[in-house]
Amino acid sequence: MLSKVWQQPLPQIYNELSESELRLRIASAKETLGKRLAILGHHYQQDAVVEFADFVGDSFELSRAAAAQRDVEFVVFCGVHFMAESADILTDESVRVILPDLGAGCSMADMANLEQTEDCWETLRTVCPGQVVVPITYMNSSASIKAFVGEHGGAVCTSSNARNVLEWAYRGGATPEGLQSADNGVPPKILFFPDQHLGRNTAYGMGVPLDQMVLWDPNKDLGGNTEDLLQLARIVLWKGHCSVHQLFRPEHVQQVKEKYPNMKVMVHPECRFEVVQQADVVGSTAYIVKQIEAAPPGSEWAVGTEVHLISRLAKQHPEQKIIVLSDCQCLCTTMFRIDLPHLCWVLENLISGNVVNEIKVDSHTRKWATVGLERMLAIKGSGNPMQKDQPAGTTVD
Ligand code: 13P
Ligand code: SF4
Image (cartoon, rainbow, N blue to C red; front, side, top):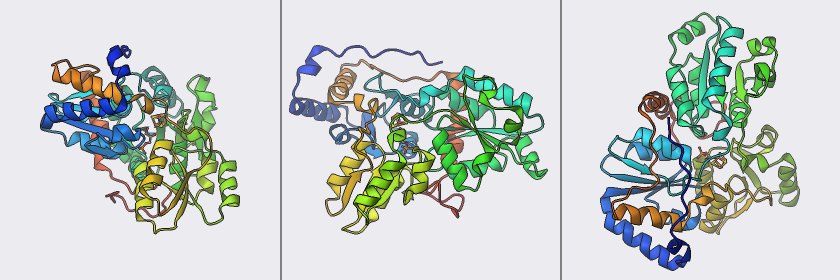
């Protein structure tokens, strides 16, 4: 398993440098490291960090970008811990993946651990004999959960391809029993973790009624359900959520609609079901970016996702009116931990021959998580989990 290490305090000098000094030093370190280094940055990173990224994308795009890094020695991942773990899994053993601040975790990923997952799995097998369960985990989960799904015939998904991954799972996923059960007319059940909202929104968009979905609370017997409910459920949703996207509420949509009648509301599928139902457009981070890039001047958007991305889009598109769906602080505090001092510190250490903050996944976890992640990369998506007629295999590109 991963050895959990806490972030050590930075040498004082990095906190004393001005922003312009940090920029100069980072630019110079990048130049010195040259082709030995690739910096990947998630769309939710602060502008100052994005400026130094060689590639910016959402989770799905960054996974592909990581998998494509064949000739570099170091990938500095400006995102959160689960993303850096996936980058380590998808890159060759010789590529060393670095997370500039080890405190950049994800509260959603922390809502499901392996022990709870194994308990849930055993319970479902006991309570639902003869039914095939295909486990699917959102990218936003630990490497051990990704390995669990890989080992049990399931896959990882991101918000970009969740719909196509669920369709694949309902066809039996990668389990021989699943394929048989689909043939026998008993469709497999999906166990989806850790984001209940992405699971619910996606399954509902595919036509699964709400009364055939159950919520699994890992702290309750039978996850807080009856045996009957578990047997009837077509999808079991883990009780997890994103603390940022859950801040958006239906009243925010109503307020925007009243104040700006021409404004379209566009939200990420990590938002609550009621918000997604009222929104005009729903899509992954990459999908949101593409919608705005393609919109004509004068378009008006209230966007329900992380504030750094929305502010950047508003700056890049002054010809459109782009606001945050609510006035709450919709900031991912862990993404925000990656800043110029930490970036400068890891790069200058690399130049001195010290690899600090390396993220390394153990070989057993790596083996099975690779299986789950490669299934994910093979199943592309349109980025829109609510789209009804999405042909399998379409791509966000
Ligand atoms: P995507 O990058 O898949 O849209 O996920 C959003 C998110 O919450 C990342 O942490
Ligand atoms: Fe986790 Fe939400 Fe932050 Fe993404 S935005 S890293 S899901 S807390």
